[in-house]
Length: 407
Ligand code: HGY
Ligand code: MN
Ligand code: MN
Image (cartoon, rainbow, N blue to C red; front, top):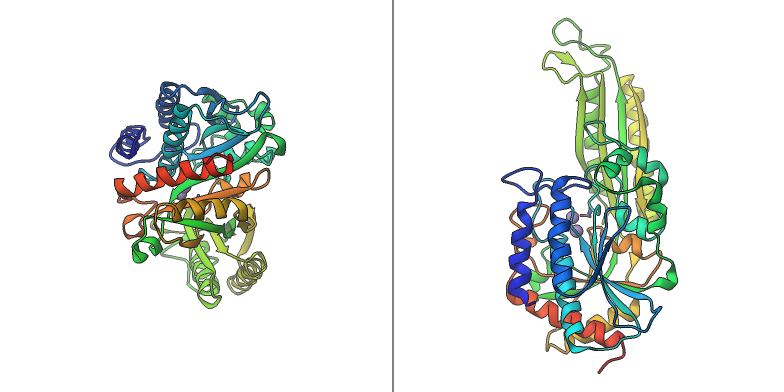
């Protein structure tokens, strides 16, 4: 399986979407099931033993270690953001498959099995449950998340059951530390650095800390025409002040990025003052303590807005993930593999979150970034070069054989 096949398959997976004409593939949807089925066929064609777990994750294992050996995991996720790109996730799954297939063809024996992973819910678009599917493998999925519901009121529990998963068995997805030798993921950089530096591939040093919250603003709905401005408890105007407050905290704190990505106003009529608004925040920084201080400042801003406008503002923590350093030993193997291609070694931090965040609780993790055009991602314009994928396949194969003790 060469780079051209990887690219063709990333293209082919786009048909598995919830929304014709754009790529939206959320957890526990027929679109995701279609993509999982397609990838499982390719895993089987490559001679791998496939299985799925209760969290709808898909795995393909190559028995190249001795009986009872742990598995070294490679892969990424198959779910997407709404109107996403074709490479965010699938590129990592399909390059992992290509590399495992190559190593399998050599008959190499390693100190571990190799297992391709296709996670079902890294983006966590549907239920705001960050890395839920890889967290299940890491034994860290919060059972309370099963009661979270999507925008149509369907709970994760019911969606999972309807899609063939098993909410009662999600805890059983957990792998112990002894069962997993490590994690390697190739992912598009989703940023401009590699393209700016003219490099196809780079070594990820770590993933920044991330906190997601849902704020609820309760005011008083009223008639847009008869309610005087003085004394209004306008939840949407208060939300606007909070959104600017979130942005202000990020702008004045070096390295903090903060996003209000979603807002819902009720009752949502042109001639009605909004009585209730919910909005989400996503705040990140490479340092846990700095992130904590930024979150506290946002909380203070919310209190001040509530007092000034006479509304109630509450917030629910949706997810908090600490900053994750990549494993120095695996990073060194990645750097040597890149150098062996005659390429400069560029290390870079990840502003985006990845399944490595969850898996870092049970195994050493490493990531390789691939140059992507304009750094564009979470956008259908995502684009990579086949020549860069060729380099990535050689590098990934070299990493695995190096850590596997093979010349
Ligand atoms: O949000 C992220 O950084 C990732 O795309 N889930
Ligand atoms: Mn991703
Ligand atoms: Mn993503």
